[in-house]
Length: 400
Image 1 (tube, rainbow, N blue to C red):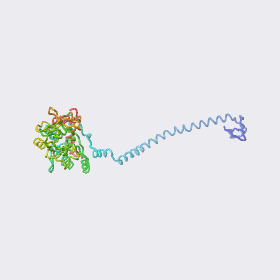
Image 2: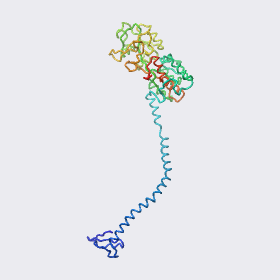
Image 3: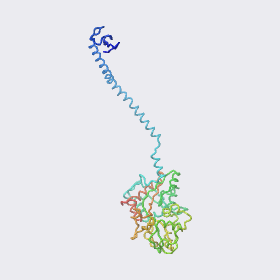
Image 4: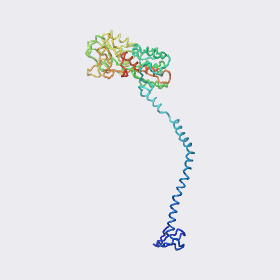
């Protein structure tokens, strides 16, 4: 039923004959006589039924059609999605591996996932077979002297290590790294950390370098046994090697000229003075190695030398000198009163010249790399760290 307005009068349209001029108060159509109320009620119900039944029929009819369509489209959807991720994978560079390379070149890494802490030397995995050459810092010879390599050979008889000296240069940390870069060594031993130039050279040759600390040592200062002083500050020690302090009386000692010695490698001076250690202006006598320097300092009045602290333990021909960071005169000795390495001061950093001892691994995916990793793990095992302690160094691992 609908209404029609004309000249302010309302009319009712008949649902049967569509006559739309019935008065608003009429109960029957003036044209066909049908009841206006009954007809419109029936028509209203039919409209509602029609409106509700059509979507319901469509719903039940479309449901199986939707499932059939979905089933047919599912393989196509899987194919499209899978192709998308496959194309994305092969087209996107592996930035994780690139990041690892950049980090190892621009910022040295202390360790990798294949560097692990084993309990015994025998437990160390992936120890290769063959003869492998190593070189570098001579101070590592103390480890060999304690029987470290003998224990390694007993546990891994096919893993054989040979120390290689340079043909036309002096042995030492820098020479060892240079030989490693040239492919003359499988691994290198070094006291000073690698420099940026070392990483760049390795990158230019298509591989990377990694240094892993295996022990802690201290750089010491020692003098002729007749020189008795309470200690030296690091600034005073620098000034001695720069030639600014030339007489022992200026630092509380006897009236005697100072005679400085250093080795050809001079890693302690590099640690102390940086690039100034290589200056030609230094009035310093150079010896081939640490053994020769010990002999020279012990036999030359007024002499002073520097070098690894572990090598002066038990040496009666020289006198160790306590050092302080500043001019506070808070001198810390490298050797205790009992004649042992001052391991506690080295470990907690109160001794001012501590340094780590590194194995340098050539990361190139070859057997050389495997050998470097194996040797590092052997020294980092609990058993290996016990040899480190016997050699007079401070173990990296705190629980051995």
